Image (spheres, rainbow, N blue to C red):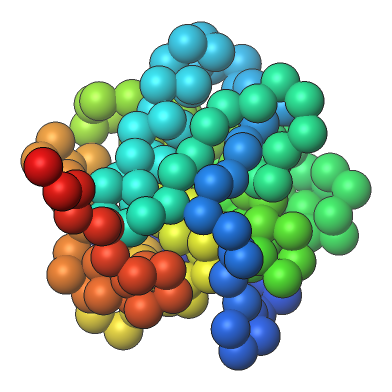
Length: 177
């Protein structure tokens, strides 16, 4: 499967663009029509866990105020960065110094746990990397590389992704017994 340019990134990070606290709340305010809210919630929760498993960051869903708002939108959607429909850019994210929100193109064929379509979980992990302050990586095997390859049922963060996020937030603290 050819690699797909998955993301358009806007508002490049300023040096030191990162969240100033470790406990962040997120809200999914608009869902796609082709996936159930339960499947979307599960994929987004797993995507946040990919980052919390290697840092001291924690993420909690919120029905009210949230640090990171997640939406599935089409075309023009009030951020001056319209989507281009199915087969174009999958999503875009804003760095922490620009709000940290993540928008997915609702026109895409989003799927979960299958090679058919575009895997929401893996794209969400990438987008949340930007929302946390990571730029694209030059390491082609890294999740933060600018291209979506294909669904990987054995997904795990690349060492380059881990080094990048830990440079911003530190590593996972070891618990004392």
